[in-house]
Length: 421
Image 1: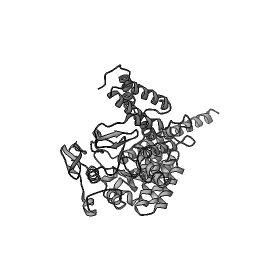
Image 2 (image 1 turned 180 degrees about the horizontal axis):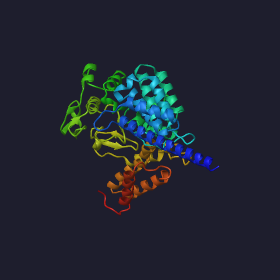
Image 3 (image 1 turned 90 degrees about the vertical axis):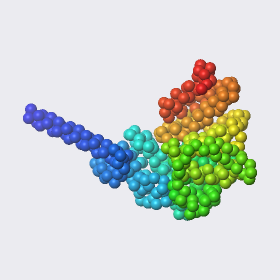
Image 4 (image 1 turned 120 degrees about the horizontal axis):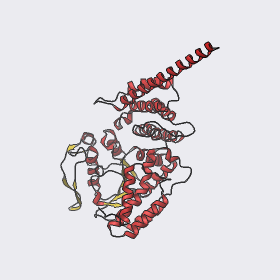
């Protein structure tokens, strides 16, 4: 009897060591694969090596959500390393990447708990199908592009609450205006709304990131969406240039409509290709057609035109008079912004959703800051009270500690506890 017990204990001990050894080996392989996806020690990413390692892991451990997530990244980056490769993606790789990201989400909970590289798996599901949709649109296959967004929605890449946010971004833009934005969430949600839902297709949406690619500006120009002084050949040849801060103007006839100091937009010494094309468009347009920027476009990407932005809520309107803000209009716009549902709150499963939806909170905060600078403390207090009722932290968490600290500091300023800087 003692012999049987001893053998059983030994067998259990050996099994325990084998499991521990396997887990340690998996951890090492996963870290090596992550490093290959990210690129390290000055080396370029190696998606092939990463993919081979990760395929071994998921074959051995099909429930390893983190390995599936990083495998999805390796496949996606093989398919489209950057925006320049969008017109060349392959559907088979899109499907494989999407399946990997889907398997990284915990069954029944729809959440990912592993290390996030750049975007949440829900966002990546949207991005891989959105990129495939761009391929089809570029090649004149609109129905196939619509199908891609249907796939993204079915597989969890689109969230209805977030979709409503982007619907309201479009609603701030008047008929036949331009809307400039940056980032995957804007590109794919706006594209889905205008293409699949046929919502506000009259607004010409331009991705400022993609203006840096070779294919996108020419494609936009061919569709009549990008106003430019360049011929197709010259347009393709536009590159970033060395730049020092220069007084720049938008002129119509003999009249200077606006003038501002245009700083370098890249590495503190260059004007990017995107910036050059945007500047050309604005100068060609000369305020004939309305121009709007998403409120979270960085200063450099919007050519440091802040002094000529009229705050509208989720967007900024380019105007020819500095610091022109119609507060009664803004207050009415803010009243229209959606409350967020107490339940279900599926948008919380994706950190990228939380970051975008925080723009609701900061629309109110920005308006309060404008009111405070105008000496209207009562309106500032009213706005901050409204935002805390509409978007309490348990419904809409802050996406970063720094943003929460900024908001709390603004509350103290409005309350008179600190001075306005």
